[in-house]
Amino acid sequence: MEFYDVLEESKDVVILTHHNADIDAVGSAIALFEFMGDRSRLAVPDTVSRGARDLADGYDFEKSPSLENCDTLVILDCPSSEQIDPVDVEGFSGKTLLIDHHSQGNLYDMVDIKYTDSDARSTSELVYELLKDRWNFNESASEALICGIVADTSHLRFADKKQFRYISELLPLSDKNYSDILSILSTPVDRSERIARLKAASRMKNYDIGGKIVSFSHVGSFEAAAARSFLKIGADVAIVFSQRDGGVRVSGRCRRGLTDEIHLGEDLFAKIEDTLDGSAGGHDAAASGNGTNMDYDEVIEEMIERLEGIFEADSKKL
Ligand SMILES: [Mn+2]
Image (cartoon, rainbow, N blue to C red; front, side, top):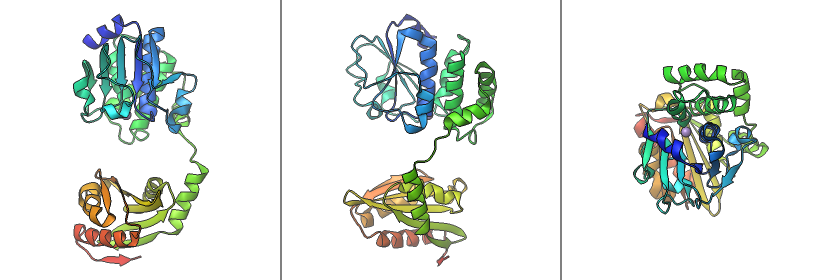
């Protein structure tokens, strides 16, 4: 295997993952590092995310690494070059490898060899596939890969046969129980975020639109977390505004099962850019926007009208 041959020949490998590295990024990087040993170093462009700090504990992730003596750069869990900025792939003369499970980004054309699969649920499972016939994973690598797979499948909610098989192969190689893994992955929510969620909940305005429960609110910050928390307590669509830095931000979430009927980013957020006086868009179940129209009641009014069109029903205040 070409990929493996390059790793075999390399003497100084930088294992790099994306900006604000999450658990899958950190987990896949740790596993590769455990395999490579002292011919490799771990690196991030800037930070390891809060959620991944427990897993990264005991490892040295170098910040914006120098590639001067490095002969091979392995990039993990990252499709595009801005997510590894300031590391400059095009200016690097050594070999570049990419392992990723996102949809294709500009890094796909910049690297020498890639192992990518947009159907994979995590980069950690790809690292497992690459190494499983070559290496008996040690305890740390096994644990790190399990954490990555579990985290990127929302605690196995989006896992399928393959991910369950890999977990069942890896778990006996780690010295952990599944409950230990879950506790590594759990991050206590910041007090300030909890207060923001509670304030958002206390200001909530709810509508019934064609049987769907649509909830609006506003907070000083953590608007995305507040919107997510509304889904947990029963909203079908949740939209939360915040005002800061002289502008307005808005974050929307909708229940997974509703994405047959609405693409939140395209059907709703992309359409309110003019009223928001800014830009907006996103995915089917998660979208966001920011603009300069501080009157978010006006934006809410337009959103309700559009949702009435999408769900083909009048709105009723609940
Ligand atoms: Mn990932």
